[in-house]
Image (cartoon, rainbow, N blue to C red; front, side, top):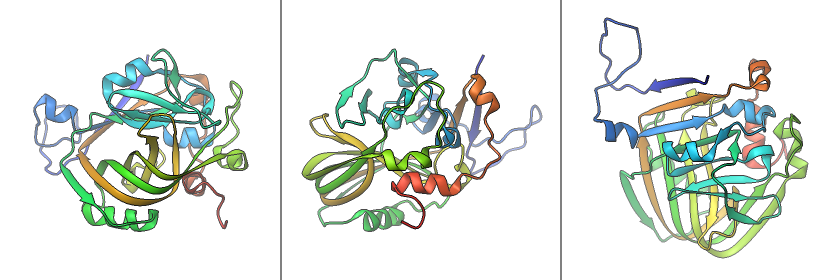
Length: 273
């Protein structure tokens, strides 16, 4: 049996005379569905070496049509876009994958943008994130972000696969990364900006994966330079964590501080490099 933990981010709190909980002004069912982040697995677990798939993609699709994650045994990177799931393998090969396969970690939502902006000026990754900060006004907000258009440069990465039950921490595998570079390319960035209070359960800050317009290339974003892009933003108000029911997860040490490992993995290089 799986344990599911749900947290509702509240702007207004009410007193309830039953089981104590965090809650917020009620939404209708559709609104809640379209503003909800569903996460399979725990971010710190993936960073620490929990790579064995345990949750089927066919079920993941029931919780979102947009998102990102990791494939079983860590062979590359995942993107969920327009209801389809794509895997960029360590070879760079990118394909739509079988719903019967499993993921160790993924986050999805039903994407319904609240805001849409077109930007025709060139930006590198740092200036893009700075610009996004000016749009995402809540420091503690949960945001799903879709960026589509033309890029003069994109650099991505993917990790090679591991053996079953091999738990080498992800930061220790950085020398094994495979990098891919693209010039004058069209495609989509699928990602999130999550708040600091979600660190370890998810991955706080910006996190983007790329999918080319031809759906034949992708990976975790390392660097980029925009040309002309459209930014769509979907502000979320709740999230669920589906906790794995595996022996490896049951014995995993979540007390270890993995902040530096998470930062190193996100930027694709060890601290100080």
